[in-house]
Image (cartoon, rainbow over all chains, first blue to last red; front, side, top):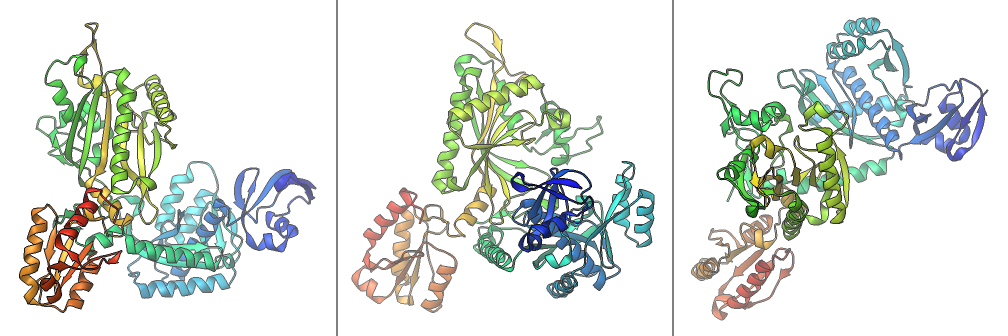
Length: 269
Length: 351
C-alpha cells in the first residue's frame, strides 16, 4: 500500500500501481470527467501513470494551464492522425500546444484549402468519437529510429537522432492505429477533445530555417467545453475586425508591394 | 550605413550579425564591407566624439528620427509590427553618473506623455529587462559586477518612480538592462513599443570621455531611449486601438464635404479651402455619385466629420456636420464648425 497526499493535505491509502486516473475516479465522477493530467510530486504526467511509492498527487483539469496545454497537445495528435488517415503519404513534423491552441506541421503536396480543413475536422470528430485511449510506450533509440524509418517519417527520425545520445529511451503515445513520437503528457483518451476548431493554414520552414523545406502548418484551438470555444472564436472574429494588417490596408494607411519585398511597407499619405 | 569596422567595435558584428543587411563579403578582410545600420547609437556617438567635452556639457541629449534596417526572418514579418526597415524617433543621452536617475525619469515622463497623448498608455505594461546570469556569454558584454550594478541602479530608479513592472530575464540589450514598455496586438501577441536603456559599458568602448570638475577624464553613462517608438509599429497599434478610426487630430482626412448636387460643389470647394488655410485636412467628394453612396463611403473610410451640403445649406450659409461616432450635430455656421473642429484638434480629443 502507498500513501498518497492529495489536495488540501488529505492523505489516502491506495494499492501500489493504482493510476492517477483511478484515484481521480474514486474521488468523484465530476473530477474524473474533467481531469486532463496530474502532478506527481511536482512533475506533470499523464493520468495513466501508475503510482508506485508514497507521493503527492494533484489532479489537473483544463482550468489549470498545464491541463489545458495537455488537452491542446492531444488535439494536435488527433489532427495529425486525421491527416494521416486522409492523406497517408503525408510526412509528419512537429505539433505542439501553443499559447492559444496548437498547430501541426506537415510535409505534403496537398493544399490545405478551407474545404480540405473541413474534411480534416470531420475526421478529427470521428477520432474523438472513437474515444481512443492514449497509451505511452518506450523504445530504445535504435529501435525507435528503425520504427520511424519503416513508416517513412524522416522528420521524426531526425528528431530521435538528436535525442539518441542522451542515453534515454524514446517515448511514444499510441492512439488506435496512430503512434506518435512524444514526451507527453496527454489526456487519457481522444474523447476529451470535445471542443476544437481548425483556424488557419500557413507555410512554415522546418526548424524555422529558410534553407530547409517549406512545410504546411495547420493551426487550431481547443477548449474543454463548447461554450469556451465559441466565446474564443467570437473574440477572434472581433480581433480580425481590428487587425491593423487588414484595417490599415483597407483604409489605405499603408500597403506592401511584392516587388519591393516582404516587411517593407509603404506608408500612404 | 557604415563599414564593418564600426560594427566590430560596437559589438553588433559579434552579437547581431545575422540581423544585419551586409553589403559586400563579410569575411573578405581585403575588401571594404558595409552594413545598413540596425541601431543608431554608434552614429550619434560620433557627435559627442567630435570635440573634447567638459562635464558642463552633460547631459548631452542627442535626438534623431532615424531609419534602421534589421534582417528579420521572413516568417516573422507581420504588417507594420515587424518589418525590415523602420523609422524611429529616438535619442541617446550622454551623462555624468549622478545624472542618471534624473534623466531616466525625464525619458520615462516623455514616453508616458507621448503614449498618453495618442491614447495608448492605459494598455501598456512595463518590463524590467535583465540579463541572464546563467548564460552571460550568450549575448552579453561586460562583467557580472557591471551588470549587477547597472541592474541594481535601474531597479532603484524604477522603484523610486513607482513603476509597476514585471521582470524579464534574458531580455536585456547586449550592453545593459532596459525598461521595455510593452503592448499587445489584437491577437494578444506582445512586443516592445518603447524602450529606455541604461548603458554603463559602451562609452568606454568608443573612447567617449569628458573632463570632470576635478580636471580628471571620466567615462560617461548613456541612456538609449525612444519617445513614441517607431512610426510603423506605433501606427499599427493605433490602428488596432481605434479600429482604424484615428482621433481627428491625427486622422489623415479630418473633414469631407459631400455636395448633394453639382450646384453645391463650388460652395464646398470654398469652405474646404478655408479649412485647409486654417491648417485642417479637408477634402471634397466631387464624384458624380448619389449622396447615399458618398455618405456610405465616408463612413466606411472612417472620416471623422462629414458635411453633407445641399441647397438649403447654401441658401442659409450654414453647414450640417455629422461626426462618425456622435452623429448629427445639427446646422451651424461655418465659423462655428471651424471653431468646434479647432477645439477638438487642439485638445487632441479622442474622437
